[in-house]
Image (cartoon, rainbow, N blue to C red; front, side, top):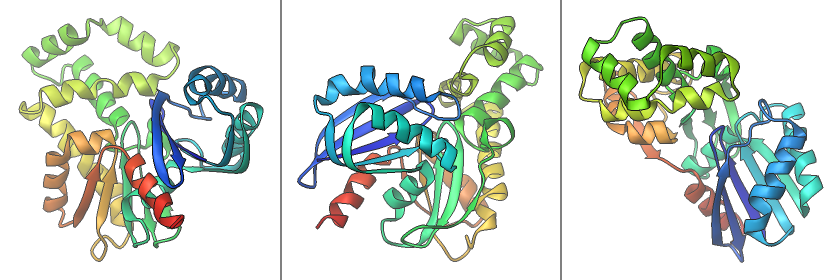
Length: 281
């Protein structure tokens, strides 16, 4: 039995594969070793996941996650799993490699993540051959939900939005400026908080000011990331909720930049299941 995990900062998708077929799917909150300790992740696995699974032993566990970019972060995940599960093989890799395998399979291409954060790579059909660091939500993650949400909030609080839109924003979320600032600077997971405002962008996309935030965010993502690969000769594929829900804007930006856009999918898990099914045939 194989356990697959696709973990972002906001949500973790789990799939159980038996005899090459997905037999169960589960969802828990996000796991990110940059923001959570080994103890917190262990507790999450033990209390939020284990009761759903009903089993502790697997032939293989493949965990792909945001924040799993260095050996230190990967070891935090490994240690947590060792305390909760039994397995013959445990693979902990970045969500970027997962995206590449889910989007490209065994073919070369440029794989991109546009979800809570953003990332990209050139995938040679087997492994990541080149990547541009996402740099995280403070100084990178262009085009991701945190970046778009941050720009929306900043424009709202600095009076860069029209008054009608600004009033609509505060009414939609029932927050004051003081509450927003306190949550961003003094409470855990400010990245999740900022990314949650993308729902307002989606609801008001017909407004030119809102459209510009999303368009410019994607433009920045392509220019600062995708342009560093051989994008003129490769197809660019995208996975993630932000890329999926704003696909029309994404396609417009790609067209304006003469970028060949391929797959745009919301959840990489289906592609990942297909990848492991193909591997085991």
